[in-house]
Image (cartoon, rainbow, N blue to C red; front, side, top):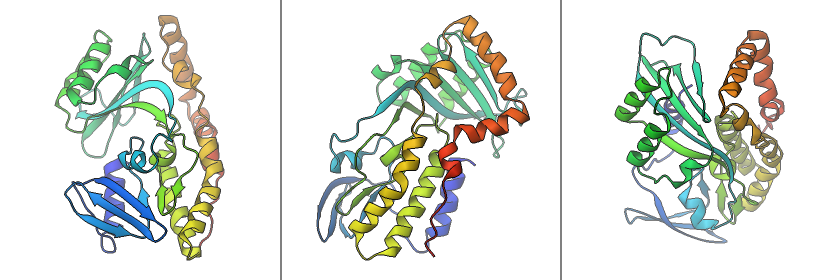
Length: 293
């Protein structure tokens, strides 16, 4: 399921009972035993019983209320996603291409008549790239110059893409998820990175557990403690992605790429792929949702 489709479903299911504020962000947070005072960028001030921070791996609000506490675990890889026009070579099958130098590119079909594309670059050369989209696209243009396959088409599509996303893959490592009436949720609390393959699942599980624990008690502090107690084990296991994994699937030599392609052909068989999917996400697969009814 596309991220936008999931967001739309969640919005439509909750919009009658929740107020959504778009095009704004939090610039100041103060809390006490009675609640949280929040100042928004547009100047509005609001008071809440609880502030749930779910802004993703690069959460600015997390850094306001947990300054310096996140110790990110870098996976030594840059990743970019974007949409390109459908081409005659595209089908209902996702395709992955590896080039020497720790580079990969790929495409997969969507339900909109377009194609979703990605670029990966292994290493730390991207850490000096700025935050502007222009700088990020320039980095990828230089990194994939001469890479072969359908890369020229993808680079051209990337330049025109309006949904371009680029980031340094890193896990969020923080010793606590709450501080008084402030709590972290989803990638802001425990980003696994796309390498773990369970980001959306953990976010939904986390929201379910947090809501469930809040219904069990009148004490917000007790609910937040229980929420973390329930989820810490599955998050810890899900984050246990060896840094060797991105290195192995992004060979830097031609021989390494040849070996990887042979392994990929084997893993792509139905018998192996179904078992591999379960083996790669054991923590989420084995997690039993608490019953809060």
